[in-house]
Length: 71
Image (cartoon, rainbow, N blue to C red; front, top):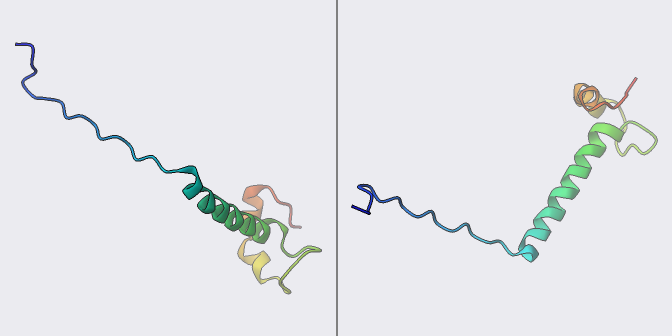
């Protein structure tokens, strides 16, 4: 009686992703995150890419949530 009544299935090995396949996705995600940070935090200032206040009003509450002063 050394065997269990219900055998425990072995867990499959996790797939290993090579680092060189991960780097382009990490760079892409970093560029997207920096663009979003610019739009939320830095737009409507001296380096503004868009004129008007539409983006500022759209992300106004997010600016306060992230701690960016806007007025």
